[in-house]
Amino acid sequence: MAADLKRFLNENFKGLILNPALVYAWDIGIRFQISNPDIPYDCPTFIEGAHRRALTLFDEIIEPEDAILVVTKVLTQKNNYFLQRKPLNIYRKYIKQRPNLYKLRLEKLTEIEEGFGEDDSLVYRFVYAGKKGDIRYPELLKALCYQDFEHPSTILKNQQESGYDIYFINLTKKIIYHLYDDRGCDILAKDKEDIRFLYEEYNDWILEYDREKIDALFEKNSTKE
Image (tube, rainbow, N blue to C red; front, side, top):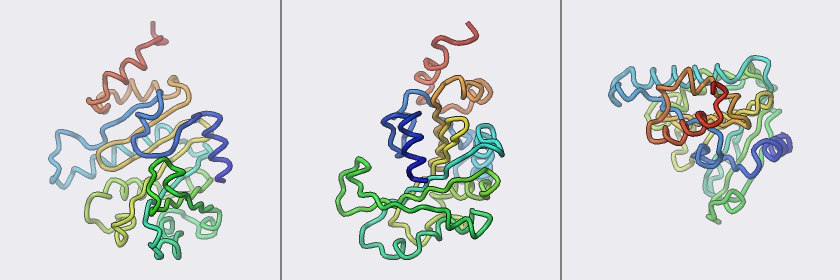
């Protein structure tokens, strides 16, 4: 499965490394503001609204029959033996069938390989191949929204010195989805026409900071012209 990931990126997203701020590393992408700026941060409905937006975008770009990869990268210190002993715990809540856990493939990458240059750190990368229905994705997306909050769903809640990112890769549509926390979500595509409908239908969700760049991408050579 790691080979499938490498092959897919080489063929469709040449040179892209799966790290946060994907939208700045690839020319074709949209950064959406997941939290509603009109709802106060401490309001009980703040996360609920962020979760709805994250789930809406996810459902728009991943259909039940699409082949997907779920890629989880966990950044930790080399002396963190807990994660070395129990790497599958990250997925136990979210993969529906326990036997499917054994489809997971684990790689250990040094940060130097990932472009960070910290030789005392370690990146675990898990790659799971399957379909949308294999995963409790509404719960997983909610956990991602809650990662900066104290909540029972928080991933790695007892390993706060470790960081993680989860990437959903639609092999069928050649689209990458990265919900980085309650603030935002990056969606990348090989072809901008494959995500133009997101730009048009959810235009008011686009992060204003990046709007000029995103508008320029979709207005250039527009199919509506």
